[in-house]
Image 1 (cartoon, rainbow, N blue to C red):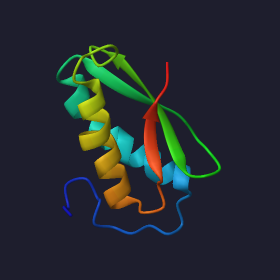
Image 2 (image 1 turned 90 degrees about the vertical axis):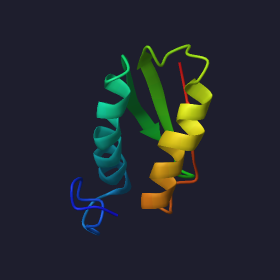
Image 3 (image 1 turned 135 degrees about the vertical axis):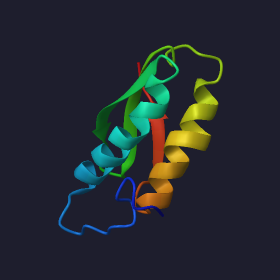
Length: 89
């Protein structure tokens, strides 16, 4: 964990949605640097996070890798209650 993004801080006062939004916000810079973006669509009752890939990420052949090895891996690592992350159109 690092001090740069605050991921080492455990803020138990935040809701699951607030935690997810914070982490997604920290990930957006990397995606935006390649012409893409990500938007939180919602969180299902079973803690499945739904996101929408935008810009260069939408329809990119590497989008599945970005989702599973990037966004999902980081969210599940930092928020263990996240079940999975899926992309929606």
